[in-house]
Image 1 (cartoon, chains in turn cyan, orange):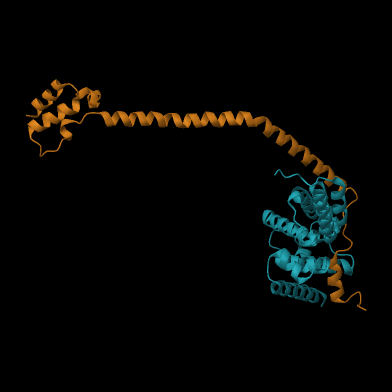
Image 2 (cartoon, chains in turn cyan, red; image 1 turned 90 degrees about the vertical axis):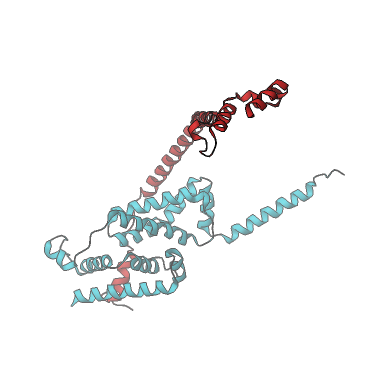
Length: 204
Length: 132
């Protein structure tokens, strides 16, 4: 006997599919939903993502590289990469984890590419006139801390910045950096200790 | 409440970097870049589609060029196999008369190997004569 397609069944299946889609969408965060739209080449969704994340990324790069122009370039590159890979995006982890994984990869590339010079100490550069004499105390602390940040490895500063700026959990930072949670805790502790020590040395 | 001069507070403020922000035109400039990127990708894919027939013809031509020398080689190998044995290449333990017989046999044209050619009784007689 020839099987006749049942319109009710197909309608039911469609309904079920649509319900599943709705359920799936409910579980997704705003950013993940926006990413789905970006994957379908929606410029409005992309604009929303940029507006939401641009300052956070810029602050992260600015503190990591101590260079505003480079920080702006990298922020731009992150969004372009997000756009290019949006069609392949799978909402397995939080969007921030995805975004900062891209950001960190670009940061490492930038550090390797620019082959940043070994830094001298803050007081050396001040004596040599390579930096402007700070006019107030807050500015001086900022300069000192900038130097202290240059002295620590990239993974220390990245872990610390993700913790302080993004308030990410140790687990999330570990996911981004592809290391264990205990390594992250150690790096953050060492980075903080180094900053504290450096600041205290110059304040004496 | 933490003092403004407290080292912990100073470090937290420094790391937070709250004052840093991008200019207003940043979002627009990225959207323009993305649009350009899309246009470039479209034109590249269009160019790729345009070149597909030419590329396939090129590949076919290269394959042809690659296989022609192989056919030539096979012919050469066949020719080499059909070459009669040189007298020097015969084993030394054979008598001179045996060598001559073998040389004669090798010199027989290939058509004679076809069974139909041996149907004639005279041919058999000739071979027996040669063998004796």
